[in-house]
Image 1 (cartoon, helix red, strand yellow):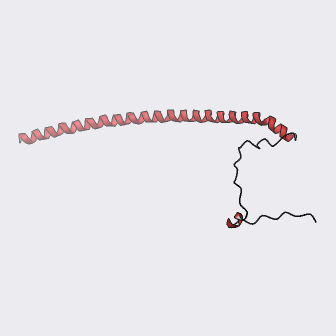
Image 2 (cartoon, rainbow, N blue to C red):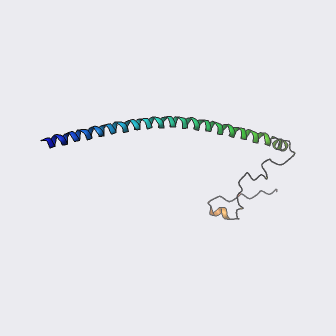
Length: 117
């Protein structure tokens, strides 16, 4: 009988040790959860600040480019020069299409130019 009391006492001690360890782990988990919440809030603030900085920078660059292009547009609009975007390479260029290729793409043929009568 003393062996079973001894075994039971040992089991009770192990149980208490396990319960104590569980409580420690739960406390650590709760602490880590709070740390992560604080970290997420800080990252959200930093992300919003970076978004605002980027937006401001983009707007500044846009308006600087607009101001920079005003003389060229003014020159063009007064009829004194070429279109400002010609020759800048900003517009994508398409390759020359061979005659008859449009037929194969399901496109209607080009209309023939009218001749004066």
